[in-house]
Structures are given as C-alpha cells and as structure tokens.
Amino acid sequence: MKQTIRYLAGVAGPSGFGSNSTAEQVTRDCSGFSTPHNLTAIITGATSGIGAETARVLAKRGIRIVIPARDVERGTAVKERIQKENPKADIIVLKIDLSSFASIKRFCTEFLSLGLPLNILINNAGKFCQNLEFSEDKIEMTFATNYLGHHLMTELLLEKMIETATQTGIEGRIINVSSVIHSWVRRDKFHFNNMLSPKNYNGTRAYAQSKLAMIMHTVELAKQLKARNARVMINAVHPGIVKTGIFRDHKGLVTDSLFFIAAKFLKSTSQGASTTCYLATSQETNGVSGKYFADCNESHCSNLANDESEARKLWKQSRALIQRRSQC
Image 1 (cartoon, helix red, strand yellow):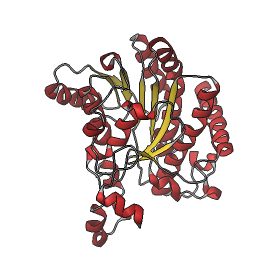
Image 2: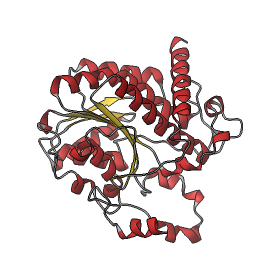
Image 3: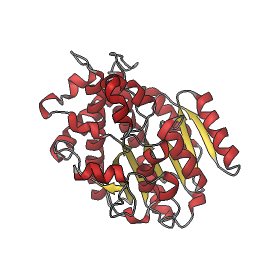
C-alpha cells in the first residue's frame, strides 16, 4: 500500500525522480557525457509511443538517433516530427523486422557499415499477440520479437559498443525495456521449448514470459561484461503502465467497470519514457549494471528474474537456437 501511495503521489526516490517525472526532466543534466553531440543511440520500437518519445528527448539533448523500423514510412514520419521541433537533430531510419533473424543481421550489417560509434542501445520494441502467430523462423511471434530479436541484435552490436567505450572513454549503456508483468510468470511454467511453440497459447502469458526473459538477459549479459572488464553497462526497466498500443491490446484484461480506476494508474508517454532516458544519460548510474529500475530508481524484480543459473540456462538455449535457425 505504501508503494502504491508513493507511486500515485509521485514521491521522488533516491535519484531525485519518481513516477511523475518526465523524460525531459530527467535528461536536463547530461553531464555524464562530456560530448553528447558525438553520441549515437539505437532505439527499437521508436515509431510510436514510449520509443518515439525516447527518441525525441534524446535527440533534443544532442544525441544522434538510429531508428530501426519495420515500417520505414512511420520511422520517417517520426524523424520529420523530431526535426520539425529540432532542425539540427541527426536521425537515421533503417529497415528491420525484429521477429526475423535474417532481417536483424541485415540491419546490423547496414548500421556497422556506416562507421558510426554506438554508445546507447535501447531494446524498447514490444509486441503483444492476442492469438498465436509464428515468425518466419517458426517461433512464437511475441517471444521472437520481444526477446530473441533483441538478444540477437545486442550480440551483433556488442563489440561495436565495447570498442566505442574503449576509444571514447564514455561508458556504453544498454537498456532492456521489460515490465512488472514479468512477475506473473511461475517458475514451473517457464520452459524454453514451450515458449517457442506453445501448446496452449495465452497472449498475456507469452508477453509476460518475453519480459521476464529480457530481465534474465540483463542479468546474464551484465555478468559477461563484468568478466571482460568492458565499459558497457546493461540494465532493465519497467516503464510503468502507459496508454500505448500495447495497452490497448491488453484492454481485454480490464473490464469496462474497472477501466476508469485503472486509468488513474496510467503514465503519460513522457513519464513512461523517463526511466529509459534516465538510465541512458544519468551520471548517477555510472558503473551500475544488471539491475532493474522503475520510476527512475532501482527496484525489485521477481526471484526467478534474478536467478543467475536460470538466466545462464536461457542464454545458452537462446544462442543454440539462433545458431541452428541461422544455418537453415
């Protein structure tokens, strides 16, 4: 109850920010980066909602933005809106389908060919499927898009991030956008093969499992980066419940009689983007890795999400699957 009251009241946490803080507010001081105009950020899911707001605000702070877009026209429209507000904004739109391993590889090859640095990678894109769908790689679409696609993209871009951090002396940041809904997943229901091809599909469960996997990805990759002494940090965030396209897909979970009450807990898009932007730019999070944040402050995730052995197991299974499907 105390936590709910703090959330509704927007009480600031140790970071000085809380649930009511906006993306612009938390990025006013980008002193953690000495040369913001030389930074490059890739933001998935930036054609709408939280991702588009994240792109707008980081571009306003002088960061070059790369938008991977399934619909290039929508990505271009976001680019034009940002540049209308900020004519000096450097925005690049590249084609991608995050549910396709082949498309992700083409995107990464195209980005790397540009010869740009890579300081920030924001794995924000999220998909919710009411009905069972499969990707071209024959994987359940929500899991393929929300988790496996980001897993592969991160792997293919990681060496560039490490190289950039070494050359510039500026710490790299990876932000995995998860959700509090990850805590709904029971340990005995989290089975890799069943997530690839569910026998009894439930859209909400599939979404929750993909978001749990994103936190586990954060936990495992943070360990690997630390072992390499790499100056790249990775953290997961719960952006809050924001009325975006994803929320409309979930509306069936909330009856009409409860919708008005639920709406009181919703964040604006700018409030939803704040924790991601905070982690991307704040000097206060230097050296912080493998953690879970909500409302711009470190928070608690489920015991399963924090289970290092399960995170390692998921990593190995994911790598083996991607390698097998890439050879097909």
